[in-house]
Amino acid sequence: MAREYPKRPTLKAVADRAGVSLATVDRVLNQRSNVNQHTRERVLTAMAALSGNIGHTAAVPFSRAEKTLHYGFVMESGIAFIQSIQTAIAQAENSLTGLNVRLHSYTMPPIFNLPAFLQLLRQAAAENDGLILVCREDPAIAACVNQIISEGIPIVCLTNDLSDIAHLGYVGVNHVSAGRTAGHFMGHYIGDREGEIVLVVSAPFRSQYERELGFRRILREEFPNLTIRESLNNCDRDEESYQNLSELFRNGIKPLGVYNLAGGNVGVAKAIEEAGWTGDIVFIGHELNADSYTLLANKQAHVIIDQDLQTETMTAVCTLLHHHGVVHQAPSLVPATPIITIRENIGMQTQPGSTPLFFRM
Image (cartoon, rainbow, N blue to C red; front, side, top):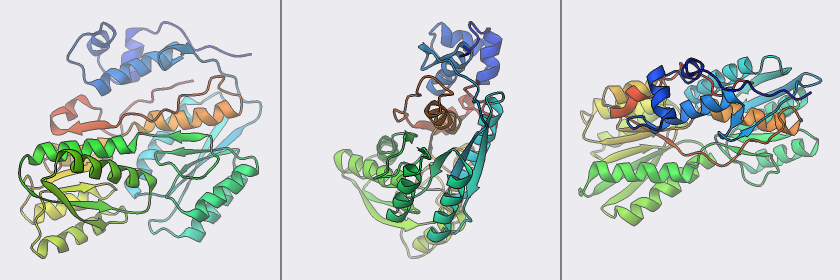
């Protein structure tokens, strides 16, 4: 029999779930001002989860799986980003207690190897009832994914979509919007000065393609005083970020800004600091974690563009659960809005590692 979420949660329950004060919950529910938008969304989502309303509207019944369902997260990305996802996976599994669902992680070593990754994909497919992927674009990966899907294993892409695959869908942010947001802040921080911007990239992730597309387009449309000099590849590693930027700086090049589309934010900040240019070079990056949080607090980064990994991870799992008839209403897969964090609002954000899980079933 389908079970309904409990109704009418107390303010304290909502506050505990969202990780905020009772006063904040009261301000949100009574539509008062002085509440950060991200905090407001956390409170509303916590209220929805406790009330049984995804999207704050419709009740979502669920059933316990008749057999144990195993879902595998197959991931290759920067070390810090994978650690953040693994934290979200652990919290998601904790909230699935009683539904007869198990979550498993499959990760690559820091140095990517295509044959090894394809083997990892096939292994995960053989051991699970569904897969959630975080990986780069590659024709061989797309072919392998489609073969796995044709064999009856449903797949969802998390944080980074793949082209030309028959998956259930993509869960993550609108990365073109994220890139345009980065360009907007870059242009406004720099002002009327004319000069160059350095892009730092890593692997051929679709998310990075889309970020760069949005960034280049808004610079072209609104900030013609800024040009992009070149892209430096950092392999999502701090060491490469530091070495490549330091070499560029030693060659006498001082850009007005650095936009890191990938991981490795600490290495970028270290290179800028050792050159003596902290504060002079506008630094915008992605992924709010313990390291980037510190960079913002210490004025070593200007803007960090983030995404809600916990909600996204749970949405990806719920998409598979809906496919298997456990969740009776399909989650919305509309790409989310990027989360913007600057030094002036980090006190309104929950420090990475302590954010509560938004959905509890």
